Length: 281
Length: 351
Image (cartoon, rainbow over all chains, first blue to last red):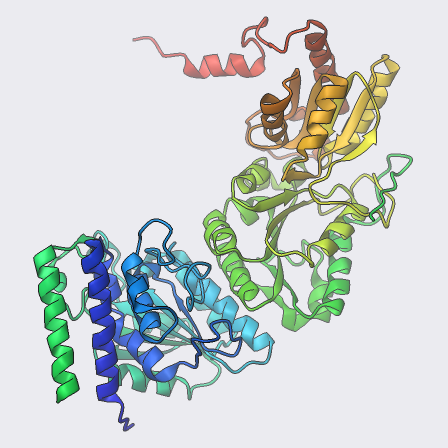
């Protein structure tokens, strides 16, 4: 599949990463690792794939996104702000008293968020409910779902895996962000997930293994997934926790971290430079 | 305007509550295309097969997946559906509490959760399936409405009303035969208690299967010259504060009666209103912080102190306290049954 939007998507991913780091820089702490690892996926979804209208966030025919790993909120908020759901300056209110941007996604607070998440595993079921509801109404829109690899410890993920396949929810396209680390350490040391694609395949899902840092790889998988009928799809993202920000990647336990001011400022500067070189090239 | 007609005699109904539930939902589904039904492998137990036959595309039997069921109901409600999700009481509440809390209430979803086989009516399924805690669990969730329809007439009205409102509702539902309290066509207001019998010496505030027992107790008390008011508090939350305060003002003594743990159930809710507004002597009939057990329902009613005689005993005690002119219950110290158990539990072994 030949697609010509690579540069555009890479630029969008950089912009999301930059805004996310500016948010963390301002706050000084946060769920940096798991927010950064889904940046490329968000760039593809909102940059090329999803049907949406920032002027009509409740448009029923839109494609829906449930970020079940709700702690990735800051990256999602950056994406939504860059797409015009709310001003980019609002990003700096993350986690401040009375903010519309809480740590974990909340559809009653943030324009553009489709489902409240945060307690892990639950977004799987709510995404299924959204997909079922849209199908009942005869809509052909897609529901996208992002879960974490640590999140796959939750039994509810597998309840949903069984149910979605049984109900042939082919308008449900899910991603599992295999960044290999959960709060307390490496997933392989805590609850080894093994071959996650094989696990979902055995539940009846169509699965795809992709490089979660490669926007074209992600986009191609989504386009392929859309051609398969009668099954839910799982795109397994091979990512790095803290992706694209070396100092965060290198912090071993980087689920929720205090961000060193200087390192943060340097990473923001680096991202700005990368963006500039991409823009001028 | 709603009108309530009270049945003249206490008799078992001829229709099971579950059949009224199913028939009402079929009617509602016909009127409103957004009504959907979810269950967790208990559609047969709940008598919901006729609904499934008529509306297969609007029926989601999730299998034995209560957590997933509540999450799916939340997602469906995001797309404008009106979900009624059922399981047995313990599994509709404690099994999936976090899903009810976050995907449901915190997310401001729109779900009616129906928990069947309240308290001792779980009978032969025994202690594992016997919810004495379901209402208390749900009462703790912000913005959750918690209710227990008393008979077919009330159930039908409640289920209908719930298709027109938005929010989180827990409906505790007896599956089989209730005692008839109201005539068909009666209309109720969620959050407003129903006065079933006037009385001046004491008020018995009851819910669920204990409503009929309270009315029987009031008869027994009348024979002894005690005038007992009976109130059906079918909405545990929001509780009808005005009605509780009026009972306190006008009768000066209150006994609650519930097929539930007295902790965090009706007794607790009434006590909270009383201590903050109009403290009067009060006693609680209900399960005294115990687990359920297996057996026939009539055995269990006696075992857990849920008979008319149990209510009469508490009424006599509360009237004694009222006559003594003090709301204090301490002349007996904590020498009641609970106190004895508490002391025993706290006893430190020697050595």
